[in-house]
Image (cartoon, rainbow, N blue to C red; front, side, top):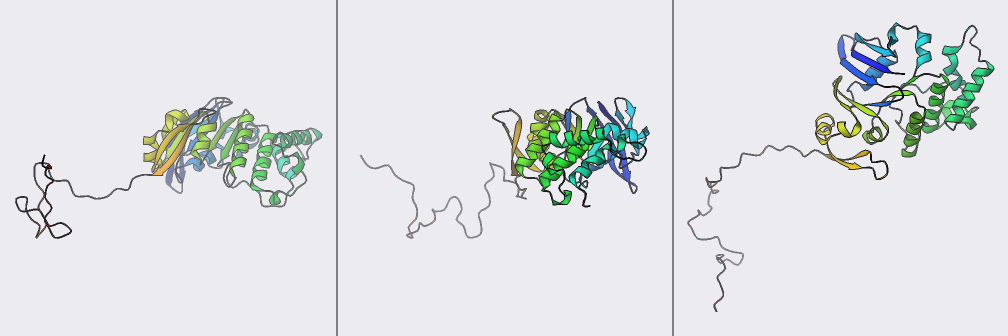
Length: 300
C-alpha cells in the first residue's frame, strides 16, 4: 500500500511542531525517519497513526484520506508500535497478540478459531510461539518487541508505523527486529535513532530538523558529512559495509571553535615582548650562558 503525506502540519497547545511535511512511501518500502532528539519524528508518526490530528495537510493510503476513515477501517489498514506501546498489565503473550484481531471482530469481540490461528501464525513468524502462555511483563526487551510485532502482524495491516523499535535492545536484538520488519513486506515508516541501522535497512531516509524535512533520498545520498555536521553536530567518516555495500558511519566530535586573534600580515613583523631583543641585536644566550651562533662550515 502506498503512503502519501502532503503538507502535513501539527500544532500542540498553539505551538507548531511539524511544518508542512511531504513524504512518499511506495508499496513495500521501508522508510526511515531520522533526526536529533526533539526534531519531530515521533510527533509526525503520531499524526500518521492518528494519535494526533493534523492542523493541515493529509495522510493518504492508496489515495484515501486516513483521517477521514472510521477507527475500525483505519486499524485494518495501519498498525503502529509507539514508543509507549509496551503494556504493563499482566496479560499473557497470547492475549497481547489477540488484541491485534480486534479491528476485524464484530459483536461480542470473542476470538474465533480463525483469529486464534492467525495469532498463532504471527507468533510463529517472529519466533515467539513458545512464549504464548508467558506473562508479557516478565519478558526481556527483545522478546517484548517480537511479541508486539506479532500483534501488529495479527492485525493484518498493509502499513506498519514504528517509533524507535530498537530502543533498549542489544545489538543482536536490534538486527533481529529490523530483519523481521523487512521480511514482513509491508510498507513501513520507522523512526530510527541508530543511523547505521537506518542506512543498512531502509530504502530511503527523511531527515527532520526543527519539525521540517531538510533532506531525503537514498541513504548513501542523504548521509553526507556536511548534513551530519549541520543537523547532528558530529564529524562523520563514511565507509562501506564489506558484505552489503551499505554506507556505514564512524563518528567524532566536531572540532571545538576557539577565539584566536587574527594573524599579523606576513610583511609586518610582530611586536617583540617587552625586554626582548629586536631583530638587529645579538642572539639570546644559550643554555650555558653563551650566545647561540649560526653553524659555520667546517674548515677544509
